[in-house]
Length: 499
Image (cartoon, rainbow, N blue to C red; front, top):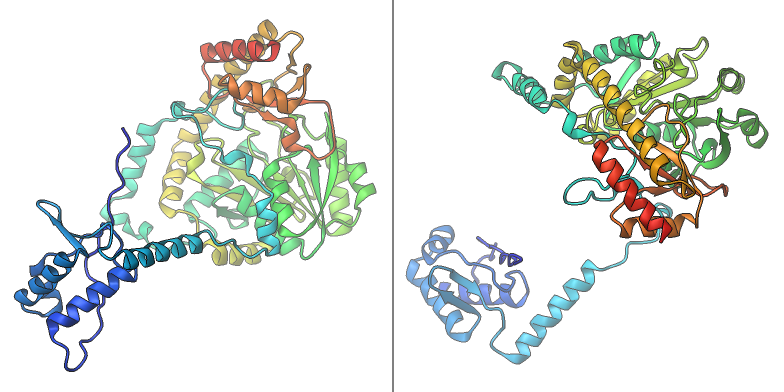
Protein backbone atom coordinates (compact mmCIF):
# COMPACT_ATOMS: atom_id res chain seq x y z
CA UNK A 1 0.00 0.00 0.00
CA UNK A 2 1.52 3.36 -0.98
CA UNK A 3 2.46 5.69 1.82
CA UNK A 4 0.41 8.86 2.18
CA UNK A 5 2.22 12.07 1.41
CA UNK A 6 3.20 13.83 4.62
CA UNK A 7 1.55 17.19 5.24
CA UNK A 8 3.84 20.20 5.01
CA UNK A 9 5.33 21.27 8.31
CA UNK A 10 5.44 25.01 9.03
CA UNK A 11 7.25 26.40 12.04
CA UNK A 12 7.18 30.18 12.10
CA UNK A 13 6.27 32.83 9.54
CA UNK A 14 7.43 36.42 9.41
CA UNK A 15 4.19 38.19 10.38
CA UNK A 16 5.29 41.78 10.21
CA UNK A 17 4.90 44.48 12.88
CA UNK A 18 1.59 45.12 14.73
CA UNK A 19 -0.11 48.32 13.58
CA UNK A 20 -0.82 51.09 16.06
CA UNK A 21 -4.21 50.78 17.73
CA UNK A 22 -4.57 47.05 16.90
CA UNK A 23 -4.55 44.55 19.76
CA UNK A 24 -1.89 41.84 19.72
CA UNK A 25 -4.61 39.19 19.60
CA UNK A 26 -6.27 40.89 16.60
CA UNK A 27 -2.88 41.33 14.85
CA UNK A 28 -1.99 37.65 15.29
CA UNK A 29 -5.44 36.51 14.18
CA UNK A 30 -5.43 38.66 11.02
CA UNK A 31 -1.83 37.73 10.20
CA UNK A 32 -2.48 33.99 10.43
CA UNK A 33 -5.81 34.26 8.60
CA UNK A 34 -4.17 36.27 5.82
CA UNK A 35 -1.34 33.72 5.55
CA UNK A 36 -3.91 30.93 5.19
CA UNK A 37 -5.95 32.73 2.56
CA UNK A 38 -2.81 33.81 0.72
CA UNK A 39 -1.45 30.28 0.54
CA UNK A 40 1.59 30.96 2.70
CA UNK A 41 0.16 28.43 5.16
CA UNK A 42 -0.95 25.55 2.87
CA UNK A 43 -3.73 23.14 3.75
CA UNK A 44 -2.58 20.59 6.31
CA UNK A 45 0.34 22.71 7.54
CA UNK A 46 1.12 22.23 11.22
CA UNK A 47 1.31 25.34 13.38
CA UNK A 48 3.64 25.69 16.38
CA UNK A 49 2.23 25.08 19.81
CA UNK A 50 0.77 28.06 21.60
CA UNK A 51 3.70 28.04 24.02
CA UNK A 52 6.29 28.00 21.20
CA UNK A 53 4.42 30.68 19.27
CA UNK A 54 4.23 32.91 22.34
CA UNK A 55 7.94 32.54 23.08
CA UNK A 56 8.94 33.19 19.47
CA UNK A 57 6.92 36.41 19.04
CA UNK A 58 7.22 37.64 22.62
CA UNK A 59 3.48 37.34 23.32
CA UNK A 60 1.50 36.15 26.26
CA UNK A 61 0.43 32.56 25.84
CA UNK A 62 -3.20 33.57 26.50
CA UNK A 63 -3.02 35.97 23.53
CA UNK A 64 -1.94 33.16 21.22
CA UNK A 65 -4.53 30.77 22.64
CA UNK A 66 -7.29 33.33 22.00
CA UNK A 67 -6.17 33.90 18.38
CA UNK A 68 -5.93 30.14 17.75
CA UNK A 69 -9.36 29.59 19.32
CA UNK A 70 -10.97 32.20 17.08
CA UNK A 71 -9.43 30.61 13.95
CA UNK A 72 -10.54 27.17 15.16
CA UNK A 73 -14.09 28.33 15.78
CA UNK A 74 -14.27 29.89 12.31
CA UNK A 75 -12.97 26.73 10.65
CA UNK A 76 -9.59 28.01 9.45
CA UNK A 77 -7.75 25.63 11.79
CA UNK A 78 -8.47 22.17 13.09
CA UNK A 79 -7.05 20.51 16.19
CA UNK A 80 -6.64 16.78 16.65
CA UNK A 81 -5.27 14.94 19.63
CA UNK A 82 -1.72 13.81 18.92
CA UNK A 83 -1.61 15.73 15.64
CA UNK A 84 -1.47 19.31 16.89
CA UNK A 85 -3.08 22.32 15.27
CA UNK A 86 -3.20 22.35 11.47
CA UNK A 87 -4.64 24.45 8.66
CA UNK A 88 -8.03 23.13 7.54
CA UNK A 89 -8.20 21.25 4.26
CA UNK A 90 -11.39 23.14 3.32
CA UNK A 91 -12.04 26.76 4.28
CA UNK A 92 -15.28 27.64 6.05
CA UNK A 93 -16.76 30.18 3.61
CA UNK A 94 -17.53 28.72 0.10
CA UNK A 95 -16.60 32.06 -1.45
CA UNK A 96 -13.31 32.15 0.40
CA UNK A 97 -12.72 28.48 -0.38
CA UNK A 98 -13.27 29.15 -4.10
CA UNK A 99 -10.64 31.84 -3.94
CA UNK A 100 -8.40 29.43 -2.05
CA UNK A 101 -8.82 26.88 -4.85
CA UNK A 102 -8.21 29.52 -7.51
CA UNK A 103 -4.93 30.46 -5.85
CA UNK A 104 -3.87 26.79 -5.88
CA UNK A 105 -4.75 26.58 -9.59
CA UNK A 106 -2.76 29.73 -10.31
CA UNK A 107 0.19 28.34 -8.36
CA UNK A 108 -0.04 25.11 -10.34
CA UNK A 109 -0.13 27.02 -13.63
CA UNK A 110 3.03 28.86 -12.59
CA UNK A 111 4.73 25.52 -11.92
CA UNK A 112 3.71 24.33 -15.39
CA UNK A 113 4.89 27.48 -17.14
CA UNK A 114 6.79 26.67 -20.32
CA UNK A 115 10.42 27.76 -20.37
CA UNK A 116 11.41 30.35 -22.99
CA UNK A 117 12.51 28.83 -26.29
CA UNK A 118 16.15 29.80 -26.23
CA UNK A 119 18.42 27.97 -28.72
CA UNK A 120 19.83 25.73 -25.98
CA UNK A 121 16.41 24.86 -24.55
CA UNK A 122 14.99 24.25 -28.00
CA UNK A 123 17.74 21.76 -28.81
CA UNK A 124 17.60 20.11 -25.38
CA UNK A 125 13.89 19.46 -25.87
CA UNK A 126 14.75 17.36 -28.91
CA UNK A 127 17.51 15.36 -27.20
CA UNK A 128 16.97 12.30 -25.03
CA UNK A 129 20.19 11.12 -23.34
CA UNK A 130 20.07 7.40 -24.06
CA UNK A 131 22.36 6.38 -21.20
CA UNK A 132 20.25 7.98 -18.46
CA UNK A 133 17.49 5.37 -18.48
CA UNK A 134 16.83 3.92 -15.05
CA UNK A 135 17.80 0.36 -14.34
CA UNK A 136 15.15 -2.18 -13.50
CA UNK A 137 14.51 -2.64 -9.73
CA UNK A 138 16.67 -5.76 -9.69
CA UNK A 139 19.46 -4.23 -11.74
CA UNK A 140 20.16 -3.67 -15.42
CA UNK A 141 18.18 -5.69 -17.90
CA UNK A 142 20.29 -7.80 -20.23
CA UNK A 143 21.69 -6.82 -22.65
CA UNK A 144 21.98 -3.12 -21.84
CA UNK A 145 25.39 -1.91 -23.12
CA UNK A 146 28.19 0.27 -21.75
CA UNK A 147 28.02 -1.07 -18.19
CA UNK A 148 30.38 -3.18 -16.13
CA UNK A 149 29.71 -5.54 -13.25
CA UNK A 150 29.62 -3.44 -10.07
CA UNK A 151 29.04 -6.60 -8.00
CA UNK A 152 32.62 -7.64 -8.75
CA UNK A 153 34.07 -4.37 -7.44
CA UNK A 154 36.08 -4.75 -4.17
CA UNK A 155 33.75 -2.56 -2.17
CA UNK A 156 35.13 -3.60 1.24
CA UNK A 157 38.61 -2.53 0.20
CA UNK A 158 37.27 0.76 -1.17
CA UNK A 159 35.43 1.37 2.12
CA UNK A 160 38.64 0.76 4.06
CA UNK A 161 40.59 3.24 1.94
CA UNK A 162 37.75 5.72 2.25
CA UNK A 163 37.78 5.43 6.03
CA UNK A 164 41.53 6.00 6.12
CA UNK A 165 41.08 9.28 4.27
CA UNK A 166 38.56 10.47 6.87
CA UNK A 167 41.05 10.52 9.73
CA UNK A 168 41.13 13.73 11.70
CA UNK A 169 44.66 14.41 10.43
CA UNK A 170 43.37 14.52 6.84
CA UNK A 171 40.33 16.76 7.21
CA UNK A 172 41.84 19.22 4.75
CA UNK A 173 40.36 16.95 2.07
CA UNK A 174 36.97 18.35 3.04
CA UNK A 175 38.03 21.82 1.89
CA UNK A 176 38.27 23.15 -1.65
CA UNK A 177 40.95 21.51 -3.79
CA UNK A 178 43.13 22.28 -6.79
CA UNK A 179 40.82 22.64 -9.83
CA UNK A 180 43.30 20.57 -11.85
CA UNK A 181 42.94 17.66 -9.42
CA UNK A 182 44.78 16.33 -6.37
CA UNK A 183 48.51 16.10 -7.08
CA UNK A 184 48.60 12.54 -5.71
CA UNK A 185 45.95 11.37 -8.16
CA UNK A 186 47.50 13.17 -11.12
CA UNK A 187 50.84 11.50 -10.32
CA UNK A 188 49.12 8.13 -10.05
CA UNK A 189 47.36 8.61 -13.39
CA UNK A 190 50.62 9.65 -15.05
CA UNK A 191 52.30 6.48 -13.79
CA UNK A 192 49.43 4.33 -14.94
CA UNK A 193 49.35 5.88 -18.42
CA UNK A 194 53.06 5.27 -18.92
CA UNK A 195 52.62 1.55 -18.30
CA UNK A 196 49.14 0.79 -19.62
CA UNK A 197 48.73 3.26 -22.49
CA UNK A 198 52.29 4.03 -23.55
CA UNK A 199 51.83 7.75 -22.78
CA UNK A 200 54.86 9.41 -21.18
CA UNK A 201 53.58 12.59 -19.59
CA UNK A 202 54.11 14.58 -16.40
CA UNK A 203 51.35 15.05 -13.84
CA UNK A 204 51.21 18.75 -14.74
CA UNK A 205 49.67 17.85 -18.11
CA UNK A 206 46.73 16.07 -16.44
CA UNK A 207 43.46 17.71 -15.37
CA UNK A 208 40.97 15.69 -13.32
CA UNK A 209 37.30 16.26 -14.13
CA UNK A 210 33.93 14.76 -13.32
CA UNK A 211 33.42 13.10 -16.71
CA UNK A 212 34.70 12.84 -20.26
CA UNK A 213 31.54 14.73 -21.26
CA UNK A 214 32.76 17.68 -19.22
CA UNK A 215 36.15 17.50 -20.89
CA UNK A 216 34.59 17.50 -24.36
CA UNK A 217 32.36 20.39 -23.36
CA UNK A 218 35.42 22.45 -22.38
CA UNK A 219 37.12 21.52 -25.66
CA UNK A 220 34.15 22.67 -27.71
CA UNK A 221 33.93 25.94 -25.80
CA UNK A 222 37.63 26.77 -25.99
CA UNK A 223 38.79 25.23 -29.26
CA UNK A 224 35.76 25.31 -31.56
CA UNK A 225 34.11 28.70 -31.13
CA UNK A 226 30.99 29.77 -32.99
CA UNK A 227 30.05 27.51 -35.87
CA UNK A 228 33.48 25.91 -36.25
CA UNK A 229 33.51 22.58 -38.04
CA UNK A 230 34.04 19.49 -35.85
CA UNK A 231 34.51 15.93 -37.08
CA UNK A 232 32.20 13.37 -35.49
CA UNK A 233 32.37 9.61 -36.06
CA UNK A 234 29.31 8.12 -37.77
CA UNK A 235 28.24 5.89 -36.16
CA UNK A 236 29.65 7.24 -32.93
CA UNK A 237 29.12 7.91 -29.26
CA UNK A 238 25.70 9.62 -28.88
CA UNK A 239 26.76 11.67 -25.86
CA UNK A 240 29.43 13.42 -27.91
CA UNK A 241 27.06 14.00 -30.84
CA UNK A 242 24.37 15.45 -28.56
CA UNK A 243 26.85 17.74 -26.84
CA UNK A 244 27.98 19.06 -30.20
CA UNK A 245 24.35 19.57 -31.17
CA UNK A 246 23.61 21.94 -28.28
CA UNK A 247 27.02 23.65 -28.40
CA UNK A 248 26.26 25.23 -31.76
CA UNK A 249 29.29 23.89 -33.65
CA UNK A 250 29.01 22.76 -37.26
CA UNK A 251 29.13 19.00 -36.75
CA UNK A 252 30.53 17.07 -39.72
CA UNK A 253 29.61 13.38 -39.77
CA UNK A 254 32.61 11.38 -40.96
CA UNK A 255 31.88 7.72 -41.82
CA UNK A 256 33.50 4.84 -39.96
CA UNK A 257 34.38 1.36 -41.20
CA UNK A 258 36.16 -1.65 -39.70
CA UNK A 259 39.44 0.32 -39.67
CA UNK A 260 37.94 3.25 -37.77
CA UNK A 261 37.42 6.83 -38.86
CA UNK A 262 37.79 7.32 -42.61
CA UNK A 263 40.20 10.22 -42.43
CA UNK A 264 40.19 10.77 -46.20
CA UNK A 265 36.44 11.45 -46.00
CA UNK A 266 37.00 13.95 -43.20
CA UNK A 267 39.56 15.74 -45.36
CA UNK A 268 37.12 15.82 -48.24
CA UNK A 269 34.13 17.00 -46.19
CA UNK A 270 35.78 19.52 -43.86
CA UNK A 271 39.57 19.93 -44.21
CA UNK A 272 39.52 23.07 -42.06
CA UNK A 273 37.74 21.54 -39.06
CA UNK A 274 38.97 22.78 -35.67
CA UNK A 275 38.46 19.54 -33.76
CA UNK A 276 38.02 15.82 -34.42
CA UNK A 277 36.33 13.49 -31.95
CA UNK A 278 37.63 9.92 -32.26
CA UNK A 279 37.65 6.60 -30.38
CA UNK A 280 40.76 5.06 -31.95
CA UNK A 281 41.45 2.20 -29.53
CA UNK A 282 37.94 0.71 -29.74
CA UNK A 283 35.55 2.56 -31.97
CA UNK A 284 32.23 3.25 -30.29
CA UNK A 285 30.07 1.37 -31.08
CA UNK A 286 31.47 -0.81 -33.89
CA UNK A 287 34.54 -1.90 -31.95
CA UNK A 288 37.30 -1.60 -34.57
CA UNK A 289 40.72 -0.02 -34.06
CA UNK A 290 41.93 2.96 -36.03
CA UNK A 291 44.53 1.59 -38.45
CA UNK A 292 48.16 2.77 -38.25
CA UNK A 293 47.90 4.50 -41.64
CA UNK A 294 44.83 6.44 -40.58
CA UNK A 295 46.42 7.38 -37.26
CA UNK A 296 49.34 8.93 -39.12
CA UNK A 297 46.98 10.68 -41.54
CA UNK A 298 44.92 12.07 -38.67
CA UNK A 299 48.00 13.40 -36.86
CA UNK A 300 49.32 14.88 -40.10
CA UNK A 301 46.03 16.70 -40.71
CA UNK A 302 45.99 18.13 -37.15
CA UNK A 303 49.60 19.34 -37.45
CA UNK A 304 49.06 20.98 -40.84
CA UNK A 305 45.78 22.66 -39.91
CA UNK A 306 46.65 23.59 -36.35
CA UNK A 307 43.60 21.57 -35.27
CA UNK A 308 43.03 19.26 -32.31
CA UNK A 309 42.07 15.62 -31.82
CA UNK A 310 39.90 14.59 -28.88
CA UNK A 311 40.84 10.96 -28.16
CA UNK A 312 38.13 9.27 -26.09
CA UNK A 313 39.93 6.28 -24.55
CA UNK A 314 36.90 4.98 -22.68
CA UNK A 315 37.49 1.23 -22.15
CA UNK A 316 40.61 0.20 -24.06
CA UNK A 317 41.92 -1.73 -21.02
CA UNK A 318 39.35 -4.46 -21.68
CA UNK A 319 40.98 -6.06 -24.69
CA UNK A 320 40.70 -9.85 -24.88
CA UNK A 321 42.85 -11.03 -27.78
CA UNK A 322 46.10 -9.23 -26.94
CA UNK A 323 47.51 -6.47 -24.80
CA UNK A 324 45.82 -3.07 -25.14
CA UNK A 325 47.17 -1.14 -28.10
CA UNK A 326 48.95 2.15 -27.29
CA UNK A 327 46.92 5.34 -27.21
CA UNK A 328 47.01 7.73 -30.14
CA UNK A 329 48.51 10.26 -27.73
CA UNK A 330 51.59 8.04 -27.38
CA UNK A 331 52.63 8.51 -31.03
CA UNK A 332 55.41 10.87 -32.06
CA UNK A 333 54.11 14.34 -32.84
CA UNK A 334 50.84 13.85 -30.94
CA UNK A 335 51.77 15.87 -27.87
CA UNK A 336 50.78 19.23 -29.42
CA UNK A 337 47.47 18.23 -31.00
CA UNK A 338 45.95 15.25 -29.14
CA UNK A 339 43.83 15.64 -26.03
CA UNK A 340 43.56 12.23 -24.40
CA UNK A 341 40.43 11.61 -22.30
CA UNK A 342 40.01 8.69 -19.93
CA UNK A 343 37.36 7.73 -17.39
CA UNK A 344 37.18 5.62 -14.25
CA UNK A 345 33.41 5.23 -14.52
CA UNK A 346 33.83 2.30 -16.91
CA UNK A 347 36.79 0.73 -15.11
CA UNK A 348 35.49 1.01 -11.52
CA UNK A 349 31.84 2.08 -11.13
CA UNK A 350 29.71 4.76 -12.82
CA UNK A 351 28.95 6.91 -9.79
CA UNK A 352 32.61 7.61 -9.04
CA UNK A 353 32.32 10.42 -11.63
CA UNK A 354 36.06 10.89 -12.11
CA UNK A 355 37.78 11.31 -15.45
CA UNK A 356 40.88 13.05 -16.76
CA UNK A 357 42.35 14.88 -19.72
CA UNK A 358 45.97 14.75 -20.86
CA UNK A 359 46.62 18.16 -22.37
CA UNK A 360 49.21 19.79 -24.61
CA UNK A 361 51.45 22.19 -22.71
CA UNK A 362 49.80 25.35 -24.05
CA UNK A 363 46.29 24.21 -23.07
CA UNK A 364 46.98 23.40 -19.40
CA UNK A 365 46.33 26.88 -18.06
CA UNK A 366 43.14 27.70 -20.02
CA UNK A 367 41.62 24.28 -19.36
CA UNK A 368 42.38 24.51 -15.63
CA UNK A 369 40.78 27.94 -15.49
CA UNK A 370 37.73 26.65 -17.35
CA UNK A 371 37.41 23.67 -15.00
CA UNK A 372 37.64 25.98 -11.98
CA UNK A 373 34.97 28.25 -13.42
CA UNK A 374 32.57 25.50 -14.44
CA UNK A 375 32.80 23.05 -11.52
CA UNK A 376 35.42 24.35 -9.03
CA UNK A 377 36.97 20.87 -8.74
CA UNK A 378 36.10 17.20 -8.80
CA UNK A 379 35.29 15.41 -5.54
CA UNK A 380 38.57 15.59 -3.63
CA UNK A 381 37.74 12.79 -1.18
CA UNK A 382 37.03 10.37 -4.02
CA UNK A 383 40.23 11.54 -5.72
CA UNK A 384 42.30 10.75 -2.62
CA UNK A 385 40.78 7.28 -2.28
CA UNK A 386 41.38 6.57 -5.96
CA UNK A 387 44.99 7.73 -5.70
CA UNK A 388 45.60 5.17 -2.93
CA UNK A 389 43.69 2.54 -4.89
CA UNK A 390 46.07 3.02 -7.83
CA UNK A 391 49.31 3.46 -5.85
CA UNK A 392 48.77 0.32 -3.78
CA UNK A 393 48.27 -1.82 -6.89
CA UNK A 394 44.55 -2.48 -6.37
CA UNK A 395 43.55 -0.77 -9.59
CA UNK A 396 45.83 -2.89 -11.77
CA UNK A 397 44.67 -6.10 -10.06
CA UNK A 398 41.03 -5.09 -10.45
CA UNK A 399 41.40 -4.34 -14.16
CA UNK A 400 43.18 -7.64 -14.79
CA UNK A 401 40.52 -9.54 -12.84
CA UNK A 402 37.69 -7.82 -14.71
CA UNK A 403 39.38 -8.38 -18.07
CA UNK A 404 39.42 -12.12 -17.33
CA UNK A 405 35.81 -12.04 -16.16
CA UNK A 406 34.59 -10.11 -19.19
CA UNK A 407 36.52 -12.43 -21.50
CA UNK A 408 34.56 -15.41 -20.19
CA UNK A 409 31.28 -13.54 -20.48
CA UNK A 410 32.07 -12.42 -24.01
CA UNK A 411 32.66 -16.07 -24.87
CA UNK A 412 29.39 -17.07 -23.19
CA UNK A 413 27.55 -14.35 -25.12
CA UNK A 414 29.03 -15.49 -28.43
CA UNK A 415 28.17 -19.13 -27.67
CA UNK A 416 24.59 -18.26 -26.70
CA UNK A 417 24.19 -16.19 -29.86
CA UNK A 418 25.45 -19.08 -32.00
CA UNK A 419 23.12 -21.48 -30.21
CA UNK A 420 19.92 -19.40 -30.26
CA UNK A 421 20.16 -16.59 -32.83
CA UNK A 422 20.80 -18.35 -36.11
CA UNK A 423 19.04 -16.33 -38.81
CA UNK A 424 18.05 -13.61 -36.31
CA UNK A 425 21.14 -11.73 -35.13
CA UNK A 426 24.71 -11.94 -36.38
CA UNK A 427 27.37 -11.37 -33.71
CA UNK A 428 30.89 -10.49 -34.93
CA UNK A 429 34.07 -11.54 -33.15
CA UNK A 430 34.25 -9.87 -29.75
CA UNK A 431 37.78 -8.58 -29.39
CA UNK A 432 37.40 -6.06 -26.56
CA UNK A 433 35.07 -3.97 -24.42
CA UNK A 434 31.83 -4.57 -22.57
CA UNK A 435 29.41 -4.63 -25.50
CA UNK A 436 29.20 -5.43 -29.18
CA UNK A 437 27.37 -4.03 -32.21
CA UNK A 438 25.37 -6.88 -33.75
CA UNK A 439 23.73 -7.10 -37.16
CA UNK A 440 19.96 -7.57 -37.11
CA UNK A 441 18.85 -10.08 -39.74
CA UNK A 442 15.07 -9.87 -39.29
CA UNK A 443 12.66 -6.96 -39.20
CA UNK A 444 13.71 -3.43 -38.34
CA UNK A 445 15.48 -1.95 -35.35
CA UNK A 446 12.53 -0.19 -33.73
CA UNK A 447 10.28 -3.24 -34.00
CA UNK A 448 13.03 -5.49 -32.61
CA UNK A 449 13.73 -3.01 -29.82
CA UNK A 450 10.05 -2.93 -28.82
CA UNK A 451 9.76 -6.72 -28.92
CA UNK A 452 12.86 -7.18 -26.77
CA UNK A 453 11.71 -4.63 -24.19
CA UNK A 454 8.37 -6.39 -23.95
CA UNK A 455 10.26 -9.64 -23.34
CA UNK A 456 12.33 -8.13 -20.52
CA UNK A 457 15.47 -7.74 -22.62
CA UNK A 458 17.22 -4.43 -23.22
CA UNK A 459 19.53 -3.24 -26.00
CA UNK A 460 20.08 -0.09 -28.00
CA UNK A 461 19.23 0.28 -31.69
CA UNK A 462 22.29 1.04 -33.80
CA UNK A 463 20.30 3.99 -35.16
CA UNK A 464 20.89 5.69 -31.79
CA UNK A 465 24.57 6.03 -32.72
CA UNK A 466 24.40 7.11 -36.34
CA UNK A 467 23.11 9.64 -38.81
CA UNK A 468 23.68 7.94 -42.17
CA UNK A 469 21.46 4.88 -42.85
CA UNK A 470 23.18 1.51 -42.46
CA UNK A 471 22.24 -2.12 -42.09
CA UNK A 472 19.95 -2.58 -39.07
CA UNK A 473 21.67 -3.56 -35.85
CA UNK A 474 21.58 -3.64 -32.07
CA UNK A 475 24.27 -2.68 -29.54
CA UNK A 476 24.22 -5.33 -26.82
CA UNK A 477 26.19 -5.57 -23.59
CA UNK A 478 27.44 -8.71 -21.86
CA UNK A 479 29.81 -7.56 -19.10
CA UNK A 480 27.43 -7.28 -16.08
CA UNK A 481 25.62 -10.56 -16.71
CA UNK A 482 26.53 -14.02 -15.48
CA UNK A 483 26.70 -16.90 -17.93
CA UNK A 484 23.35 -18.40 -16.93
CA UNK A 485 21.61 -15.02 -17.24
CA UNK A 486 23.20 -14.54 -20.66
CA UNK A 487 21.85 -17.85 -21.94
CA UNK A 488 18.37 -17.28 -20.49
CA UNK A 489 18.20 -13.78 -21.99
CA UNK A 490 19.45 -15.10 -25.34
CA UNK A 491 16.54 -17.57 -25.35
CA UNK A 492 14.14 -14.71 -24.61
CA UNK A 493 15.60 -12.72 -27.51
CA UNK A 494 15.09 -15.67 -29.86
CA UNK A 495 11.47 -16.13 -28.77
CA UNK A 496 10.69 -12.45 -29.11
CA UNK A 497 12.18 -12.09 -32.60
CA UNK A 498 10.82 -15.36 -33.97
CA UNK A 499 7.31 -14.50 -32.82
